[in-house]
Amino acid sequence: MTVEEPIQEHDSLLLGTEAARNPKAPVPVYEHFLDQGYIPDVLLRLGIRYFLGNTASQFATQPVVQTVQSQQKYIADIKSLTQIALNTKEANEQHYEVPTAFFQTHLGPRMKYSSAFYNYENLPSPDGTVYKAKNLAQAEIAMLDLYVQRADIKDGMSILELGCGWGSLCLYLAERFPNSPVTALSNSHGQRKFINSVAAERGLKNLTIFTGDMNEFEFSEKKEWDRIISIEMFEHMKNYQVLFKKVSKWLVPETGRLFVHVFCHKHVAYDFKVEGEQDTWMAR
Image 1 (cartoon, one colour):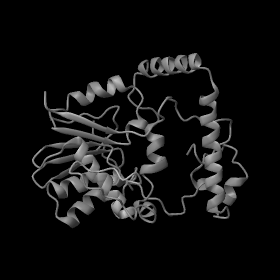
Image 2 (tube, rainbow, N blue to C red):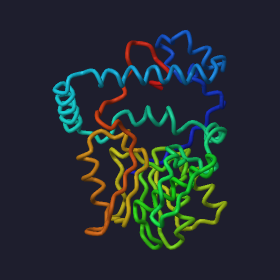
Image 3 (cartoon, rainbow, N blue to C red):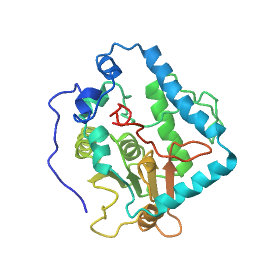
């Protein structure tokens, strides 16, 4: 089901952690200073590394048997879910319906809301050349190029992107492959509006954006694509069996391919959970 609702714009771009929190939940004292920009960047980075280190050390010190049992339980738990994803409405409110102008202040020119590729390890491309980005703008393009290479996309292929953000990839594909019909699915009306405006400015006629929730969304008519691409969206998904069953219906039989970019831990799988009763900024 495709959901079409009026786009709600926020009255202000001052969407700090205090403005976004649950007003009934207690808020840590440091959040006021964080919102006002009083905490230096170096201290923020140290704090983030500290909390990440705590999580990593928990996994590193537990016995192997316990790790395996935890992984088996995790897999069994997500398989038991009836929905593909949980809390989609909350995630949308936290990130994707925030005014685009807010993200334009700190994202790159391509508005890529996911990993960029600086190539610090000097990895060669398929043709043997080594491309090393010198800034965010170049790193965005480098990663978009890497998707094209690894997904083996050719001009003329039909392409579907699941979870398109502010259009960094779908707009890039529509530009680079003018003979390819590009379709993208977003959970945000604000993102759809922004992408359509950029496509109109660039004169792109081969890009179509749909809005919907992966739990419920179905195309109104049978459609199949040569390539389905998902960039850092699977982190929000839970029951992959149900998800893959749905996505498989959208692939061209035999030759269709699904390309997924997901960020994760190398050895363990776990969900982000809010510890304690405080409504922390990370939980939002």
